[in-house]
Length: 148
Image (cartoon, one colour):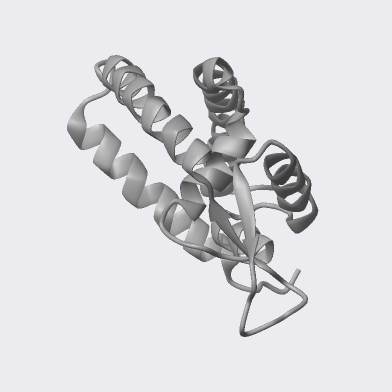
C-alpha cells in the first residue's frame, strides 16, 4: 500500500506532465510567427548564453540527446545555428546561435514576457516561489541514483 506522501507525489508528477504539455503548446503558438517550435526555442535559448555541444544542451535541459540532436539538425538546416570547432572534442562540435536566431529570440522575448505576465496574474508570487523551490528540489532529488 502506498503512503499518502507517495500518492501525493504521484499526483504532482501527473500535474507536471499536464503543465508541460500546456507549456509546449503555448510555446509552439508563441514561436510559430518566427518559424520555430517550442523545442527549437528551448535549444536556442540555452545556446544564447554561449556555445555548447548538443550533449551539454540535453544534459542541462534534462532532455534526450537524440531529441536534441534532431532539433539541432533542423536548426542548422534553417540557418539558426553554426557549428564551431570544439578544442576539447573534435567529434562534438560546439553550437552557436546565428544573427538570424538572435533576432528571432529577441522577438520571442517580448511575446514571452507578455504571455508570462498574463498567465502569472492567476497565481500569487508566494505560490510561484514555493513551486519553483519545490520543483528544483524534486529535480535534484530525482537526479540522484536510487536503488529500486
